[in-house]
Length: 290
Image (cartoon, rainbow, N blue to C red; front, side):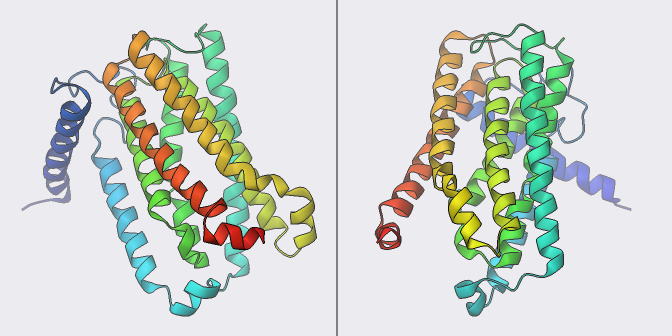
């Protein structure tokens, strides 16, 4: 009799082979990467194989597709009615991510300090278990952040569930799985710290927006800085791209991970720039300004 464990093992064999082969072909010149995991994290949940992540991502896509299909025309125009329970949950969700992001920012900076890291150009050292734990938490947080999309669907915010949004959530979890698997430390600290800092600001804005939903005067007076969030994110991506190039050229950090980061940041910059131009310089942006 075929058991669930047998089915999972077969599924894992297929998925893991496809993912590793793709990474080896695209970023490592066809050379093996699957046989050299980090000795620290290789047996940690959702790290030893990419199959847990891929399965989670496929479920995410299924839920998003179903949610988009079920949204009514009225909800597309005005958004779905929000229950008190949903509003409370969203506030707690945003507050939790503020705290978690602040913790990850502080922890990654602290670990970089105690291990005497260079700002850029830091090789991975498997003895730095503390940094590996921070990177692992950061990776798992990216899986939790899929909830952002589910919240948008429950609110009926169809415009927010864009290709950019879905691509960003899926791809960032994939690259941080690769980092957690191969080299959870070294130069990875910079992206984890910077992204965590950006998320402190971003989720603080979302939290304050939610708490002041009935007070447009408060929003206008105190949340004017929200319009700079996209610029802040793009600055983050430029900085990470520069670090990725530097790391690839001058650091002993795994080259295939650095190459993956560079390619990934280039795609994000193009997509966010397109979003930025459309929002602030397109027809809708001009109409809003007028």
